[in-house]
Length: 154
Image 1: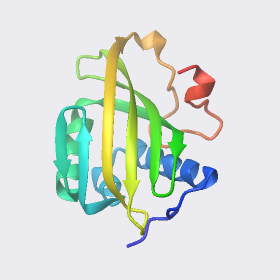
Image 2: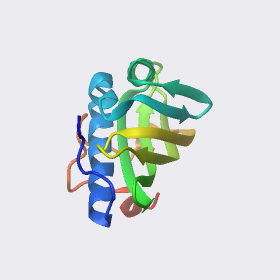
Image 3: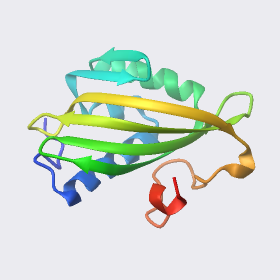
């Protein structure tokens, strides 16, 4: 299975890869997202270590059961042959109606078929008020005309 764009990445293909990842995560469909990773993909997400598509899918299912109304923006920070570093922010609410914004960085490594074989994520979050939310599009894909992280000053 191949997941273009493929390494080595240019500025344009790294940005495309990041946007495709953002779109998939904004779908909140764990099975869809898991297909972007190798069968043995290794993750570090905060203090949790996950290996393989089945574990990725289970992790994301748990995540999106807790993180409601999830909306994410990713932006390329840097890239090289088969690696991309992105920064991101996302907003969500918990089942008590409290809103949060999380900020983080991810380091991605891809195989020759464009599947992510390694993901290392560092994430911090803080509570926000509903009035402080910035990611206000309808659930799903971020509209092309919605500001990105740099535009929002994040």
